[in-house]
Image (cartoon, rainbow, N blue to C red; front, side, top):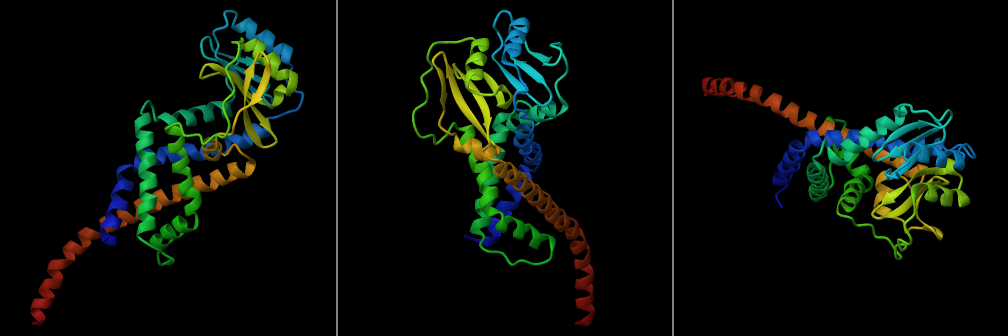
Length: 305
């Protein structure tokens, strides 16, 4: 295929989706630090299960909340859904959401929905993958100490990592999990306080990230080592769910190495987007000068002849 055509296709797809990609990549960079913050927030034996259950019953007497999130370091409990509540576990009173949690929540909403435009997130992610594949088809580049050389060098040296990001994102968008083994049966429906008590029997609540109703079943997400594991919670106990590898890889929740890799991936993608736009901008700015110089060169050539 014509390399010049591929270059133009690569350039115009990137420019068309430049703004949404900038938002997706920037919020992705913020979210890359979330697994590190979650692991650092685990303070063993810092959360009392009885107190958590009492506070859930106090602020959600009708049992309408769909779940909770726990921040052991900040001694903070969030009731999800209606009614929602931000609770200080130290004094049991209402408080504001921790700044880091608010930042990650905003970044996740933007990263996944772009202000109620989820279709644009999927389209932009697909465009990112296509741009990378076009780059591969254009062949190995010549590496030079220029803006274009740096752009090509970053792309090729980080290619496996940066290609993994949009591909796993698309898997998540279309529900592809590649999970091995069957999902745990829903079992008897249990309340949120009951789920907290069941989880607390086998796990330290300080390591619990969230407990709540997901897809018609009660689930808990628990930090084990550096990994965020998912469990089904039923009246009979807890069952570890098969790992959703696209989600784990995309979010970096499989280990702190994954979180650090996501930071690198986000920085590489941001650098590629910025350098790509700069390369195009510099060419556009030079074009009028070339057009102005054309009559002068023609006149010089005519006078010589």
